[in-house]
Amino acid sequence: QVQLVESGGGLVQPGGSLRLSCAASGSIDSINAMGWYRQAPGNQRELVASITSGGSANYADSVKGRFTISRDNAKNTLILQMNVLETEDTGVYYCNAYVRVSPEIGTKAYWGEGTLVTVSP
Image (cartoon, rainbow, N blue to C red; front, side, top):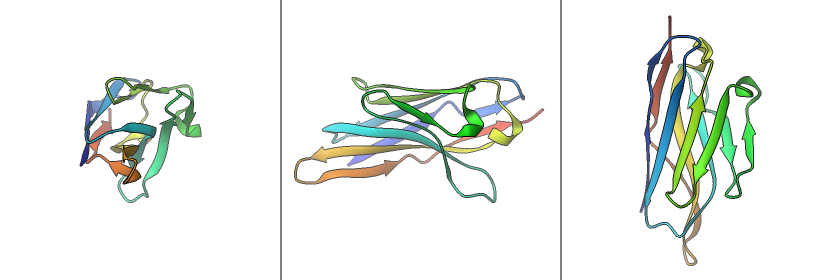
């Protein structure tokens, strides 16, 4: 079993910063791509940023230049540094990881339960 636990959400004013963390634990052989998604009220879940095991990052146009995704492969952790936050960034942020559990089971996608980010004056 694999668990992803997010932390770091909260209430922040526009222009402020937050740092989200995601810790993966359990029966992990290796982790391939990891990513952050968010879901605002009434909207579908959308990709915010993703990163390969080699460190290549991809960002949604709406967060380019403001958010930075990074990972520590040795610690199985994922970070999202969010700067110059806007009210439109409000939502529940979910961690996603493609985890290789074992050669027999192969690679599966796992999700955390999410952490709420609220950007409000």
